[in-house]
Amino acid sequence: MVRVKYSIKEGPRKAGTHWYKKWGRVGGCVLRHFTGRIPNLGVQRYCPVCGMPSNRFAEFGIVPREDAKCIWCGALERHRLVWLYFKKMTDLFDGRPKSVLHVAPERMFENLLKHQFSSGYLTADLCDSTAMVRMDITHVDYLEETFDVIYCSHVLEHVSNDRQAIHELRRVLKSDGWAILLVPITAHRTFEDPSVTNPSERLKLFGQEDHVRRYGPDFVERLNEAGFKVKVIAASDFLTEEQIARMGITDAAGEIYYCTKQ
Image 1 (cartoon, helix red, strand yellow):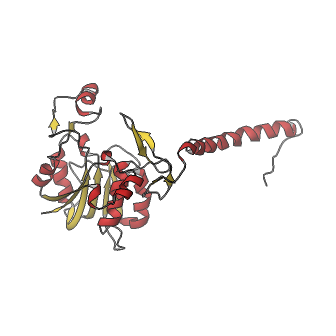
Image 2 (tube, one colour):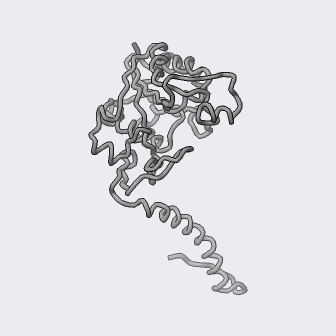
Image 3 (cartoon, one colour):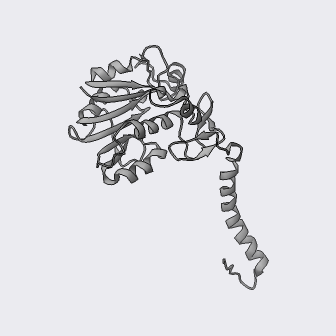
């Protein structure tokens, strides 16, 4: 029971109005939070990251994609794909302690992985102050063979010297460890031009103002050059058609680049 205190001068009506204004705003925010999801409530779609169903996923993207973003946790197509791969095809959740480096951590993964690995889990970012450490992945300040697992998704297209970054990630990966390095594949072959620094020109050439290249399928060659052995995995390699459809694993999810040391 909430007791509303008021003075004789202000009276119960004025005090009640004050209480309503204060808590009504909070309730309004909560109400908008859920009513915004009402059109998408249902069971046609299922997000494997948060475990919540919906009628469809929300629209998302610079060029908007329909049925893309989980209405509950925000997971996109690629997040749902890689989470399924983590659970079905790797030893990430086998119960053994691991040291995990998560570069540019996605919020929908962060709490889940921190709960799983506790002090063995490290988030890193060059710009995001909420990450555990500030890290320039072209100069990783950790010893060789530090991490059992490295996950770095949609970061390298922002890095001018991506070859150096890939080399550094390999250096700090344990000899029996594995890394998943994801980039958007949006060209037939990788295209970059270091002379292009204007944001509007980058948007025109590379698809986003802070991207410095477009990757093609030859991204694998850069991984190989750094000393990685790479498996390229599509959704259809480990998921059924029914799973792909219900979990919204569209072509926008891309492929998974599973890397181990040669």
